Image (cartoon, rainbow, N blue to C red):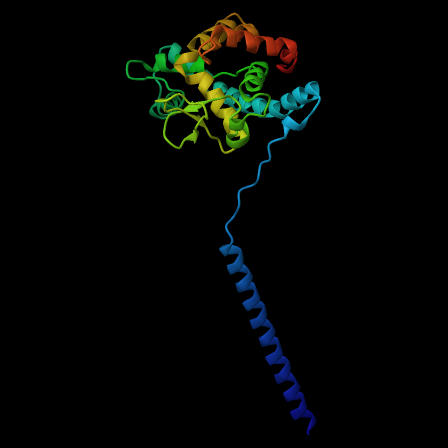
Length: 266
């Protein structure tokens, strides 16, 4: 065979081989992409610590507090940031200047989130109510309530619904039906997607529900006097959190004292 002709055949074979390889790569890539698209994306799995299997009571308590503290601090920081955003609005309305349409829109969004009835309130009234509601809850108070309500992180509602604070809801299917729910009752124990969502729900509940208006007024009085928010005093506003009323307040205060939780408020 002539050299030129043999060279042309070699080049043709090489070209066909290259095309075949490109086609194979494209085919494999397409199949892999299709398989990836066919597999549903799974949400990250959040494993709640198994506090029930920690035999040493004091170790269990400290690990429970250590685990939950970061969630509370993070949500408090978020609330504090919104409070700082609200501060200039407070100065504006208290000086008698009207809010701009954009400013008023933002204020009304906050009012809706924090359950402020705006129907009979001026802009000044709305902002001042929000100023009382949008504020932190001391870490020590939140930890004590979580310990009490969740049986130190071992309750069914904590493990199945990330609900460490015993929060209720009233729409069918919104949560977990208590095993001992009285006949005729419709409440469920609210289910949250994550611990952080449960903590955020608790803080919003404290800051917005009419039952805790006394707590918010105690907190605002401390603010007005330039004092740090004292969880032991603030706990007095929780008598409506539980049917045990004043006994519940005593329980929460005792957990704070016995575990030196105020040391975590700094």
